[in-house]
Image 1 (tube, rainbow, N blue to C red):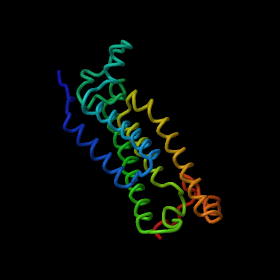
Image 2: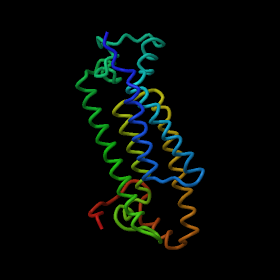
Image 3: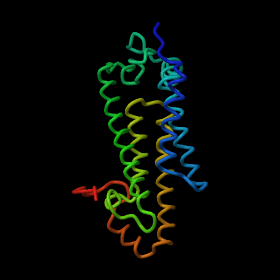
Image 4: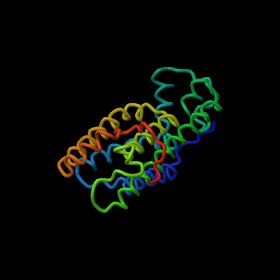
Length: 208
C-alpha cells in the first residue's frame, strides 16, 4: 500500500520557511507578541506534521470513529485530503488545495506589503498605502494564512487551534491600539474612526 507520509525533511523545511518568514516580517518584540507568534508557529508545526509527516486526523477518523473511507488508499498523499477521504473525489480536494494556496499567497503579500510601509516610515503614524484602508494588514495576512491552510489541508488539531489564534491576534491588535492611542492621541482616534480594523471597505487605490 502506498504511504506518502513520513517526509520529515519536507515537514522541517516548510515549518522553518513559514516561521522565519513570519518572524522576519511581523517582527515580534514584546513578550505578548512572542506569545502569539509561538501559538501561530504551533499551528503550522501541527499542520505540516499532518500534511507530510503523520496523518493523525485520517487515523483518528478511520480507527477511533470506525469510518470506512471510500478511497482505495487514503494514505496516499493525493487522497489524504479529508474531502478526498470522505468520498468527494481527488479533483474536488485538489480544487480546494488551490483555493487554499490562493488565500495563503494573498496573506503573504499583505504581510510583506504592510511591513514595507512600516519599514519606510521611520517615525509617526502610518496612514498611507494599505494602512489607509486597514489598520492591521499584517494580522489580516496571518488570518488569511490560517484560513488558506484550513482550506488546503484541514486537520482536527488546526481546526481546533484556528479560533484561538484568531482571538489571540485580535486581542493583540486591540492592545497595540491602546499603545498607539497613548502615543498619538487624537491623531490615532481620527485614523481609527476612518479606517477599518481588518477588512477594507473601499479599495480604489492602495499603492500610494
